[in-house]
Structures are given as C-alpha cells and as structure tokens.
Length: 332
Image (cartoon, rainbow, N blue to C red; front, side, top):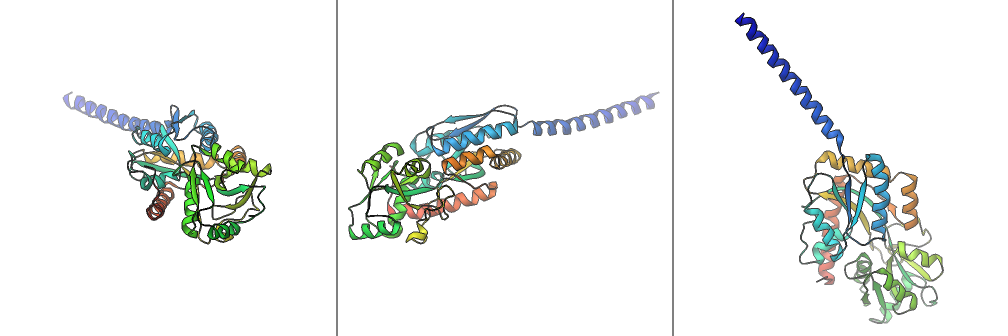
C-alpha cells in the first residue's frame, strides 16, 4: 500500500510538473503573441502640420489596423526635437512608446551642448521611413538666376551680398544652406526665422534671396508659379519634381543633404517587439494610401532593418560632427 501511494504521488507530481511546463510555454507564447494589447503612443517631437507629423499620422493609422491597437500621435515640440526625444528616452521600454525623428537625431549631439539623452545609447532603432528633400528656391520673377550654377557664380562675384532664409538654426533648411556655402566656399548671410512659414513669406516678398526649403511647403508655390526651383538637396532627383536637377549635378559635386525620418523606441525594448513594429511599418509603406500621401508631400520611401538604421545614424552623426565643427554652427 505504501509503495502504491508513493508511486501515485510521484505520478501525480510528474503529471503536475508536465502540465505546469506546458502551461508555462503556452503562457509565454500567448504573452508574446499579445503585443500590442493596448494603445501605442507615437511621439512627434515637432508641431503638427509638418512632413514629420503627416508621416507619423498616416503610417500610424495603417499600422494600427495591422496590429489591432490604436496608435496615438502626441506632439511634443521644443528645442529642436530634444524635449520629445528626452521624454521617450526615459519611457518604459515595453514597446508602447515610440518616436519619429528627423536627421536632427544625428545633428543635435554636435549642435547642442546639453541634450539630456544619447541618440546612440538611449534608443533602439526600428526603421528608416522616408526622406523629404529640401529644394533651393528663389522668386519666380527673378530673371538673373535660373540654375544652381548661376547662384554660385553670383555669390562668388558678390561675397556677403546674398541671403538665404531658414526655419531656424539647426533645422535641415539651415543645414542645407550651411553645407552649400561650406562646400562651395561661398559667403552668404543666413537669416533664421521662427518656422518655415514666415521664412517662405519673406522669400516670396523678396526680403531674402534664397531658401533651401522643404519640398512639402515649397512645391505648392512652385506649382503656382510663385517660386522657382533650382536644385534638389538629395543625391537623387525627386519623383515629385523630376525635372529639377540635384545640386550635386548642377555645379557642386559631392553635395547631399538628406532630410530623413526614422522611428526609435527606448533602449531595452525587446527585440521581438522591435521586429513586430518594423515589419508593420514596412508593410504599411506598401499600401496605396501611404504611397499617395508620401507622393503628396514629396516624401521618398526608404525602409530599413534596425541594424541598418543603427549604422546609418552613426555615419550621419560622424558626418555632421565634422561639418558643424568646421562651420562653427551652434544652437546655444
């Protein structure tokens, strides 16, 4: 009787252990499959209305349908994107807080003395999304300039006479102009504004000579015949304005300013969660709705793996560290 009882007990313990093990495996699989099980917050560290905001909202709507949970876009503007980035760097690394950034992620470490975060160490890369080219524009009424080569010739003949507007120090619009003067050894006066809107307004009014504006805000004025497009800042022509040459092919070899957009999560976010988000974003960029929106704002789809984005961020950071050091640009 005792032997039978012992055998039964052992059998019962073994059965229970097996059940718990199987249950544990099923539980783990279920927990993994459950992400996301609540809304995801997507931080946009700039005001509503710009290309970054449009990209996040358009992708967010499509990705949320794929993942089965809402993606809530929150605009946290300020300090060149640093306020929003700092907030996300301190968020819980569980996949429920992500952010979209521009190439300021690579520029700001050299531009600001204090960031409050480390762009490389404090985030997990998800994917490159798209780039939205800047475009060198001037008033359409001007008859004395019709190409990038004309601009270079005029500036060299009249050092310090010509101006270019920007949406503020450190913006991609400013950096595009700074790179232009740096590579061409040109003397042009930078006129920073508080946002692209007032800068474009003064450009249209003739108060400033040039602007390396985002194609998103300049294209409507180009289409309306108010602004003249001279050159695209990216290495390839834009599908939205295919007849406009790149600056590199128009008299300044090696020029490239690529205003890219990408997504990141806080450091420590699980790899399987990053993988889920990356695949959903790549899938969303193949939908007709996202493609149409990208075309409307002049965005060119990129897409990448997390590893590719990590490598790209490091190379961009190194590139701009050198340029900013040699040009003396500072946001402080």
